[in-house]
Length: 166
Image 1 (cartoon, rainbow, N blue to C red):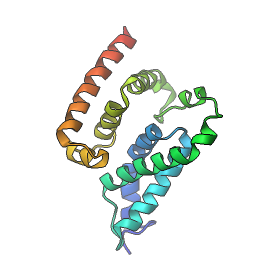
Image 2: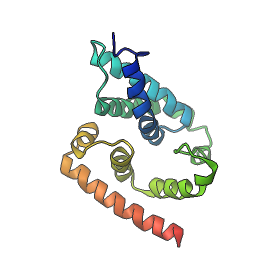
Image 3: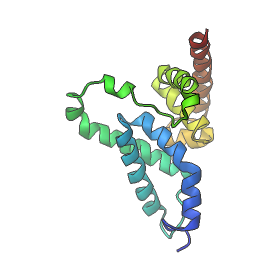
Image 4: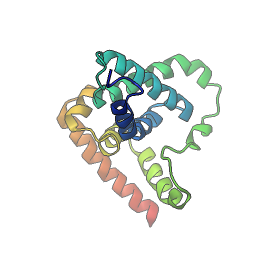
């Protein structure tokens, strides 16, 4: 089939969306390796749910990543309590070149400082490229709430970045 994994259409879709999916998963998961696993599981599940060799809709994949990350966190909680919480803060969310490391560290710090509900919406909007309607569907909230969270999140991000730079 033309849209099965391994096809040109599938490779193009994956090349276009893999970065944004992984970025979202990194925010949802506790470790980078968990994020990679969750993305892989979500892609397989989304592709299977789409059926007939179709490419999965991006909102479906984001929602599946979110659900898989929640499931993984619940099942790993007892083991995770024994780990050092500071190890999580050392992992970078963004794949970067050395020259961009300082700027990305500032942005990452600002994004991490956002309230969780603001951070989710800002990430899905800016890096996920989703509409407020798609974000609302993924998070099970009204579209106006998604838009408000985005607006408040961006304002908080501006303030925190301004404080970090000065």
